[in-house]
Length: 433
Image 1 (spheres, one colour):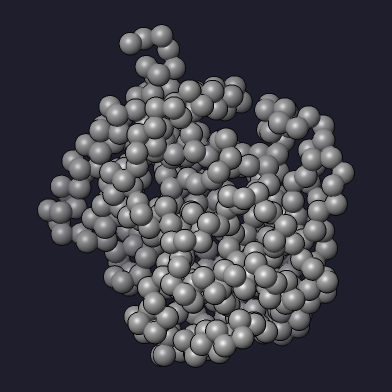
Image 2 (image 1 turned 180 degrees about the horizontal axis):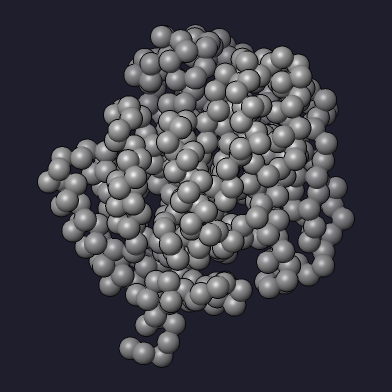
């Protein structure tokens, strides 16, 4: 912990259990967007990467006056900060992802960010939030999520073109989503982006596959050239398709480097869910990253991979992921697939027919016995989160036709069909009873 005053218990005691620190100290800065037609798209800076738009108001976070700083003090940002100060997290319409995660018994991005900030920020968090509360004005960005490009070598079934170039190609060629009008806009960074880099303590690179993005490497080089790297922790979201050997010398100049590794299963399951993945490469690279002690796993739970969740857990146990390190630290996060579009809801566990949901629960319950016998609290906690997500997910039969339609299109370009990878789904893709 960089500041002994920043214990999470102290933060929640002083600011309330419903606080989210991100709108006070962070900013999700995006300079790319997939557009339809010739619309001129602005850069945006949002108080979360998972903001939902229940009222279709998507311009609240557009950069104004070419200034990230000024935009973070517009009416939308102030409204959100005030709502958290008033303890109204559950009432904020844009926060449905975190609300749903917490209702389903799994760790939310709000909770993860709060813990990360309590560990990593050097300022007195409670004192700074109370200062901001007086005027609801912020003058510094302590943590910057930077999303410069959607360049990615995967086309994950739960992804969109905005987060992957391969997925964008799929949307255009297979889904014919917007015909030839769909395109990617890459804008330069706003002028005060470089001022922010002078005082920021955390930079979270996101995408896209961050390790392969030239803008990420350019920013890393800039921070080193300006002698800023030694004061900054960087995090990188990666699919572990490669290992950044050539970047290790540069990474050594930073205060610390943390990886979030996306692993949604093993073998054929991850190769289907994350099209483009080669499990042998992912396994080798992810274990190399995880054994550095500076990496965590993010498992996106879907109707595709939940039936084999115990295979992933047993793999993680076999490879000593988690329990051999700090017992209070989280190393495996489970993220329910989220979204308000036509794709993501049908990929959620809510799509599971009752018999498949019961099968998934029975496998987890049976697998849990081994970890109970050896009293492995780390993996018991992970299994219980899977079980909680399933128990709290309403069965929604209306999603099944959309799931079948979606998977049928994915099958048309995948190495294997879903029913070859997860045969339990076969009866729902045939005329068999």
